[in-house]
Image (cartoon, rainbow, N blue to C red; front, side, top):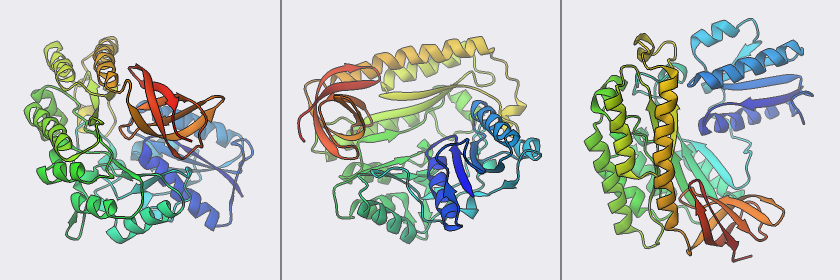
Length: 401
């Protein structure tokens, strides 16, 4: 049977799709060249945001009407499963493919799941209901997968989990895992997502700074800059604690790193959470200005059935949510430009992700998008001199071939 895997959502779902791909190949199925030519369509869906759920719904119905066999998997709420049961032939749970050896979609970047699930129960989030409670993979399996990826030519290892910094395998913490991966011979970049501020301990802060292969890039969601809103979100930290974390991270990287790349801090924020007043939103804007993030993923609150926040009155009009989202985006543009100006004239390494004509496109260790003039091979690391910047990326020319 020819199959096509359609993936929605985060890097965790991308990694899951690589494992699903391995499972289907092992069963004797063959990947279809196009969606139209597939007999079997696997929808790896995401219920975290309504927009992703709507796109998955549309794909399922489109392919079912075309007479294809449909498998649904991923982060799926029970309510969504019930609504789609007449359109689905099979449901797969994450544990059915979690331990498969993945068939990676990229030859130079390997997504390695280290845990799945979440115990935090943020009031707006469906992940504990779709992924279940936290389960950490044995360190032996993680190390074997990392080494296999490096042997196959990976230049970047991305450790994945809904809450990576709560990883625990026997007596090994996430800090201990990072140290083990960092010791693996070879020249590669090491990154990880997603982090929860409440689990960013002093030990972990020191570890990420001391481990030379860990990229100077930390994604640390703040979600709201107001303590009352954070409490309603069930986030278990205060604005003051968050600011102290970022300060400590920047100080640790400045102390333990010899390179001159500044630590890039990226984040997530939600606007228009139930009960968020204009004053409370202004606290989020204030935090954005103070921290000066390199990048932020901004979202308007959307109630997800089954969560605590869905029971609250969604009392901020969508027009106001969009206005607040744009306000934060305007702040981000300014701070991102300020951060990127530090790169002008510098020579940085980039991992080339694609080439087109006389240009290459890739990312720095700090996650900056780069467009550079010159010739280079996809999946290799090259040096680039940065000549221009914008809020969302850098531009320059290749120096090494």
